[in-house]
Image (cartoon, rainbow, N blue to C red; front, side, top):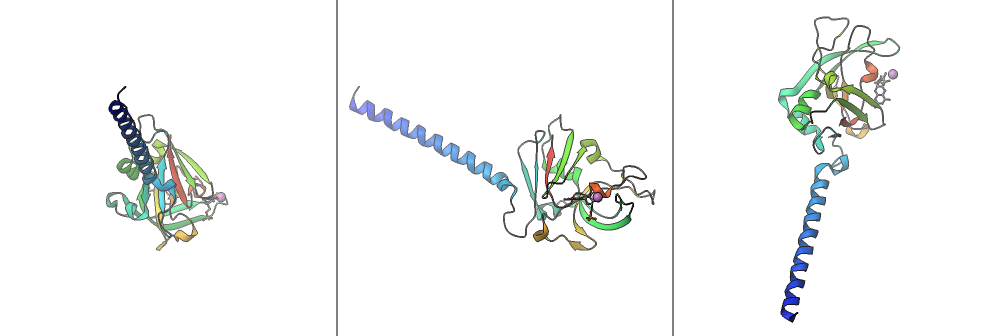
Length: 194
Ligand SMILES: Nc1nc2c(c(=O)[nH]1)N[C@H]1C(S)=C(S)[C@@H](COP(=O)(O)O)O[C@H]1N2
Ligand SMILES: [Mo]
């Protein structure tokens, strides 16, 4: 083998190795940039992560991004009953969750289960059909119909990001007598779709 030929081979090997390393680095950066592991990018900012076997990739949304999705915004008085039978109304500002999933995620055909996971580990599971429903009720007020929302403001006050991820799952009752308050997941961090 000529010296020149060997030099050429070694040059090609070096270039190939460098390209491969560069490709791996880009892959790594792309993955990092995707969601930063769900950690807020700066103090005082809320981030929602949407992932799961039935979602393409991983989607991260900031509070500002959610607020800018005007077509899905909802402001309403929601009725709640807790497990002690306490009945109460709360005024919420937030966004229809099904709207967010439609606009921001690429769902696979087999998507069926939606799990809301809070910072403290509290978890509530729904079917995708339940997330899509637009006819949750208030047993005391048959005229009202509710959607399932992710709220960032309660009774005129935004949630303090220092007290946890500033999102709360809020939903009406499935039927009269339904104790719906336990399903209001505070500090939602992740929505899993499987
Ligand atoms: N993140 C989180 N959300 C939660 C819970 C919880 O333990 N952690 N408890 C649930 C239950 S059982 C009830 S009755 C209501 C109570 O809400 P409150 O503490 O605001 O009255 O929150 C629900 N959401
Ligand atoms: Mo509860």
